[in-house]
Length: 205
Image (cartoon, rainbow, N blue to C red; front, side):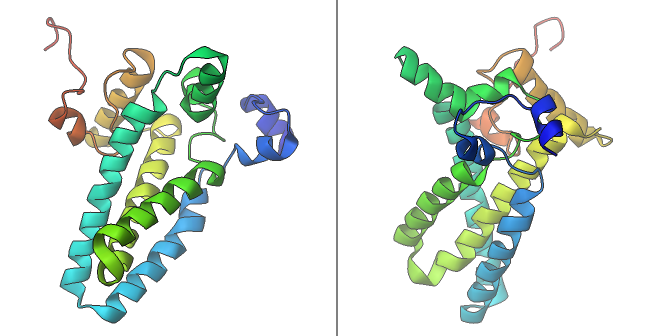
């Protein structure tokens, strides 16, 4: 395993512990967060009927897609000044653009996903309170799992469906044509809503 990682994935930390935690198995989001989402759904269904819980989960999923889009656009692609800023940008997202097919850094490692989800949980609690927290959080986690799983599949799996090929093309264009377009990996509709959809050259439009 260590030889495979060293051959496919560049070292970005001198500290071996930080280096280890900068990587994640591609199925980590499913193995770690799917059981948590299931527990939240169970808790929500204990307190409310199925229809309200489904509505809460859909709302949570929608919140995730907004997090994905705005996080990718304004945080992951934020250019900070100075050497420290460049280093932070590289660690947050630049490494993925420099090594887009690194299989161990295609999903968010717990070092990054846990703080993101922790902040989201706090915001969701403040907005929805105890009554809506579990259902909304379940939908939010499901959205995150779908995003990270799809991101890995777009880089490393052959897309046989028309929708899959279209999503892969959008994401590859973001990587190799224009990084200021196509920020929504699992939610491309936000690119159309906010004016960052990939624009075809005039002769191909």
